[in-house]
Image (cartoon, rainbow, N blue to C red; front, side, top):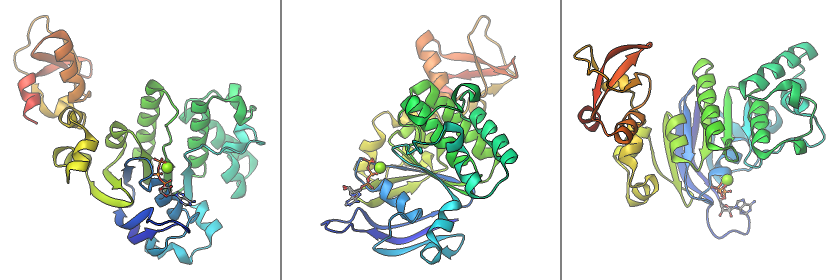
Amino acid sequence: MITLTNITKTYAQSSYAAVNDVSLTVREGTTVALIGPSGCGKTTLLRMLNRLVDPSSGKIEIDGRDIAQSDPVEHRRGIGYVIQQVGLFPHMTIAENIGAVPSLLGWDRKKTLRRVEELFDIVGLDAGEFARRYPKQLSGGQQQRVGVARALAADPPVLLMDEPFGAIDPIARARLQDELKLILSKVSKTVIVVTHDLDEAIKLGDGVAILREGRLIQYETPEAILSHPADEFVEDFVGADRAVRRLSLFRVSDVMTRGGLQVAGSRSIAASLNLREALSQMISHDVDELSVTVDGAVGGFITKKAIMTV
Ligand SMILES: Nc1ncnc2c1ncn2[C@@H]1O[C@H](COP(=O)(O)OP(=O)(O)OP(=O)(O)O)[C@@H](O)[C@H]1O
Ligand SMILES: [Mg+2]
C-alpha cells in the first residue's frame, strides 16, 4: 500500500507548489491512473515516490514505512520506474538494458538471460532482432517498450510509469495496454501510471486520480469519474463524450439477454467485447440489436435500448 499524506513540493526558486497538499492511498495490488494537464505535477509526484525529489512537506509511506527513512538506492530497487523520456542506457545493448536491474541484484547469468527473453516476448519485440542493438538504433516506440520491459525485469512490487506508451501508435498501444493489464492481473503489483490519455486511464486504472495545478481534484473509480465529475474542470477534462466512454467499462455479457429469440440473419458480437464497441457496430450497420456469441456460439442478443439503460 502506498500512502501520501499532505504532500507538497515547491521547487527552489519557484513561486508556486508543483504538488500541493496531496493525500492519496493506493491499495496493494491495485493500479491508479494519474491524469491531468501538462505541468500539473504528475512527474513530480512520481519522482517523490522514487526519492528522486524530496517533498517540501508531508509524508509518503509504502507498506507503512516512511520512505524518507529508507536508503534511496535500496528503495529504488524495489520500484520499477518507466520515465517519460525513456532513458535507456545508451552504451548498453537492448538485452543489457532489460537485464540491468537483475544484474544489479546479483541474479546469475542464466536466470537473467531467461528473464530477458521472457520480457522481449511480453512487450512484443523480437529478441533475435533487437537484443544486440543499441537504444539509438530503435524507434521511439520500440525504445518505450524496452523501457517497460526494463521496469518489469526484477518483478518489483511497485511500478511507477510516466506515460509509458506516449510514443506508441494507437494499435500497438492498445495491445501493450492489454498486455500490461494481463500482466497486472497475474502478478500483484501496486502501480501508478501517468497518462495524458483518458481512455488509457479508464482502461488501466482501478482508480483514476485527476490533478490540476498540483492539487488532487478527484480520485475515484473510472465509473464514478465518468458518471459524476467532481466539478466543471473534471467535466471538461473527461469530455462531452463521457457517456460513450463510460460504455467501455461494461461488457456485452453484462447486459445481454441470454437465450431468447434469435433474429435471423442479424449481425453478431462477442459477449466479451464492451458496450462502446457494441453501440458503434449498431450505429455503423444501422441496426437496433445484435446477436451475441459466447465461446463462438450464439447465446443471446443485445439491444440498443439495453445499452442506453446502463
Ligand atoms: N526541477 C524543477 N525545478 C523547478 N520547477 C520544476 C522542476 N521540475 C518541474 N518543475 C515545475 O513543476 C511543475 C510540475 O511539473 P511536472 O513535470 O511535475 O508536470 P507534469 O504534470 O509531469 O507535466 P507533463 O504532463 O508536461 O509531463 C511545472 O510547473 C514545472 O515547470
Ligand atoms: Mg511529466
